[in-house]
Length: 93
Image (tube, rainbow, N blue to C red):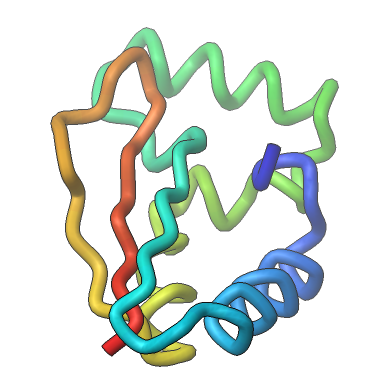
């Protein structure tokens, strides 16, 4: 559901998640990311007009991991993207 949120709300939500997690806590963010194939690029681009282009921009640019790192998370992708969906594991140190 992160792709439905405006950029500033995404950042605020990530900051709050980081704040409330205990040291060593984990957060799994599963959402659309930067398209990895031509077909997913087209589908997500067209879908972004229905869902709100501005809301999906960070997802389409693939910068959700940068948002997580910006607040202090250590981030890893736990598996390959599946049909445009990325699996980001964020750990609070």
